[in-house]
Image (cartoon, one colour):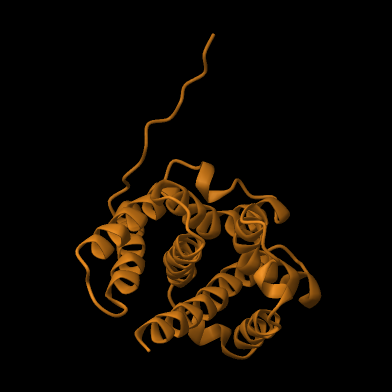
Length: 208
């Protein structure tokens, strides 16, 4: 019974991550004079890109091919932006918040699915990072932006930290959804802190 509840909870955070990342992709596309279909596709790539790479590496059929709800959720995100854009983006940092939420949710989904596949902890954390980051990388490349993961702001490192905390929670045998919730919040909060306080990794200077 508990395993079934945890599985259902993972599906829920997967859907929430899809919506959050689709919103971020569509919003960025809206500033590039892209039509509605193009904006939808940018949102879809943002939402499913990382998970698709993860599933291909796991030798599994990409998740969205088996469940049309991911396609529908992206459409709902587009509709939400069309109808509620003034309310959704009333504050300038709303887009950043959606991206941080999607990053946290997808990271833990990727880790959880990889762990269920019997992979080692370090591989699970890498898969979680791929799930969380690569959709955003594809989004940024498609709209001709330097991907966030390659900028100085800490991005992928937040996924790694969230994964480490998630496995610490499992080791401590925290019950129910607590490991997932704590892992997601760790990624989101650390990402917000990194941006707020301008925490950055050292930049690699040119080698001559």
